[in-house]
Amino acid sequence: MAFEDRYNRAQFAFTQGVPVVFNLGKGLNVLSGRVIINATVTITNAGAAGTPITEAGVGTGAALGLVRRIKVIANKAAGSRYPNGELVNCTPQSLCRYAIQERQGKMVAELTGTGALGAGVAGVYNVYVSIPIYFGDTLNNNNVQTALNMNPVDSQGNPIYTTVQVQVDLAATLTEIFSGSGGTMAVAGMVQWEDDRIGLTTDTVPLVQEDHEALILAPNNRFVDPQMPSDGFFNQWLIMTQQGTPGWQLSNAILNRIEMQGSALNYKQYALGIQQQMLDDGIYDPSQSMTGQYFLDWTKGLLGNSNAAPGLNHFFDINNPSGAGADRLRIYTRRWFPLAA
Image (cartoon, rainbow, N blue to C red):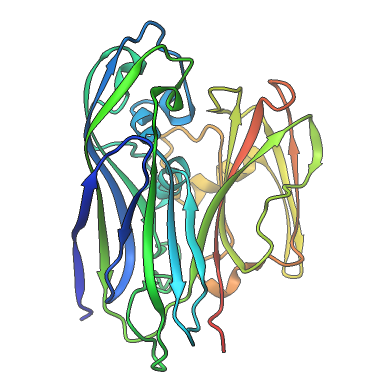
């Protein structure tokens, strides 16, 4: 039986606009981690509540806006076979939306308190928000295969990382959550890091997670995302279609179809067909909203079925209902990389 280790490892005070950096201790393999915001948000002078931005317009998701972006940055040791640099660079929205497939098809924005932040009106709001980062993958038959290897050395005795840091970029003002708000916010509380580790006797496969936005300037039936990663092997994509600046709310009015061609892939599917497949595969709960979300798993349970990013052509057939630059795609990708020889 593998040794398991899980607990809340560190916490720092929430200081608006100032990044928090956690240095991860060595030992075992990280299956998942969580950035937790346990705080009180006081909104004052809110003459105009403003327009909710992204998840702030979805139920209790406003509190996700307290975090701009989360990065996991690895510094490889000399002689390491593992990659160097950013292993994670994602917004809370992408991490929580990806987590739907890890949480029995349900979206969880916050555990307790008033995560909607009163829709931006003046008041005092207690929040407990847990933003997950999954290194393991329950869609993989070997779900621990991509766990983050925090052991001092690999199976060949080579050092792995000198340091691994989790950087949490925090919001500075209320207008980052509610555009045009006339109020101010004061956040008092803690930013915490918790992770779940397991002891493995084999090396794991390095996993990289990132998200990015592609602005839509006009309708286009052959749109190519210029920021799509071009290295590694794609496990999964999650495409979120967002309509109307400054709110960027999830919408089904943007994506018509996706077409992909590669050495081992010939894919062409309409947007509704993708969402139907998400239900058929049990990835999303039919009682939950799938609006503006299109999840593509390329592995079919086996990491070897992933698609090589080099030479993979993709085309999005998209609408632009809100006008030039006022709609966008937010695309979250998971890629793995083979260990260096």
